[in-house]
Amino acid sequence: MGKLNDKVAVITGATSGMALATAKLFVEEGAYVFITGRRQEKLDEAVKAIGRNVTGVQGDAANLADLDRLYEVVQKTKGRIDVLFASAGTGEFAPIGEITEEQFDRTFGLNVRGTLFTVQKALPLFADGGSIIMNGSIAASMGFPAFGVYSASKAALRSFARTWTIDLKSRNIRVNVLSPGTIDTPILEGVPKDAIDEFVKLIPRGKMGRPEEIATAALFLASSDSSFVTGSELFVDGGVAQI
Image (cartoon, rainbow, N blue to C red; front, side, top):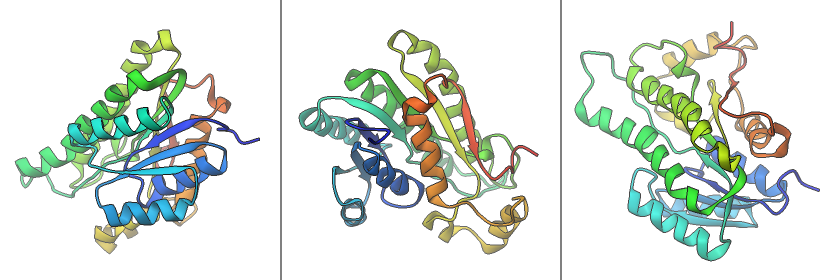
């Protein structure tokens, strides 16, 4: 019997990397999963890769109309949500003095505003006792050059988890942040190699994490294994932010 048998999960930004690996594992553990992505072609590929018990809904988590459409599909198809992994996010390098209004709005628009409304708009469908997981980052707890806007956006999610745990306690909905370290995913394709090398040097084991290592942590937070865990931040970072 799977750890998520008969559960309904929603995972945003799940066309690649950590979120896609999580969607695959959730299905293996018995869940039905709704995934989102901005590009239809990539979304179709992800649905094919997952293979079963999955519905793809094209949309941008920063677009409130797209979120409404996502939850309309969930309502019509399954009628409830047991697990939400708000994974969609973005980040750009820019040192203080060179940050543009557009960069700030893109990052906070998706990472903070998008996450907030991804969660809030899901609540009418949420089953009591469910689990909300937000995709954080070790950047919220450390200082990385030229990464201040991204880091601040992820720090906001840590604050949300504390507040929403109190707001939702009457429904026993758990809210946690999953904070990865440097993970070997396609998003790193746009990051300068010297920056990646500097990140890897900080990892005690000397190599990046794998998407599957994030997926197993997400499964823990989604399942009853973590029934006494809420308002917390789970670091899956190889020890980088802990030593």
